[in-house]
Length: 422
Image (cartoon, rainbow, N blue to C red; front, side):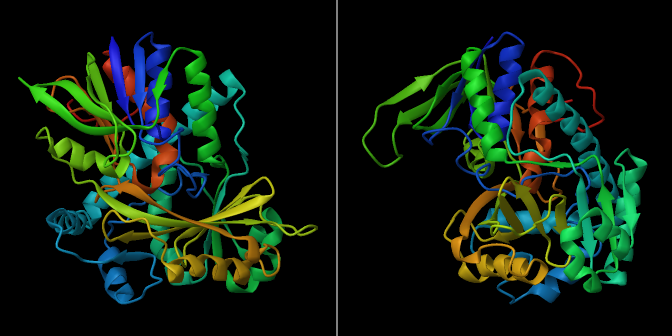
């Protein structure tokens, strides 16, 4: 079949890779000049099966109330007149029950395990390199109550196949010696030894380059304007060269099937053809800092549950990322939220990272209220969804790409997951 993939982030690039492997004629459309330049550009860098507890859980409403008015809070709702933001928020609250949180955690764990194995297979098959480390992810807790609240979710992930070892502060430092100076603040840790870290941007760019050598056509600097649909099917995608308000040539591209991977812009595009989703942009921040010469930074990827941020080693750099701000589609930097990341870096690794050379970034993540993405066929027969992965796009990217190719090929993916349209 001729297939058009909309979006060249990690989801679109992985989808194109596996669709081409199946022998399809694949074209990828993206408004940027290269792959991976939006949501996939500077994320937290974790392949984190062990971070499967959704934001929407029984403890979330009280935490959000406590964070109201705090500009540096881990989850910030900046309410506006957008009705889709309100719908998202109400659906989020509906997912905060224990039953929904359990179901969503199992979904995310299953997809994460499948995707991590898929990523490993790509690495073995291609030799692709992206500052990857296979030292696991270490979850850090600074209060006994915080650890005990997290423990049921960790046990549930372990029950469904995510290896998890609980550690005391001495064991934490033995695993990651760079935390020795922070040991007195820690009460417990959970180490997922099979989790990984790596640069999602480097991976996406290199997989796109490999895909192009296999016959995938990448059309960059091309804006997706709208989908056309008739009779329960997409009949074409209208695109324009160059920026949306600049000069450029409009044309309609046609294919047998279309795959939606436009991240936070997926919901708007889908509404134009009557397909409803509860995807809303969650702005995330990151700070990338070089390691000072002669200093030792972490090699195990860290998840700091006090501030809901992560620390990942990328060669001679450390990427600190996290927080979620639901405020619309803007990507301007909020200095308070940026500086909260570097302040935390100085608390945990004083003098280790060169804060003067920090590179801040903010990007929009396509979040669903449940954290569970949309993967599968839409109500339009030839329109497929691979979007809504939120903070776990890098974790779930490879497996979601394989799964959508399997579904389009009429096969059942080897994972227990609630795919759309089944």
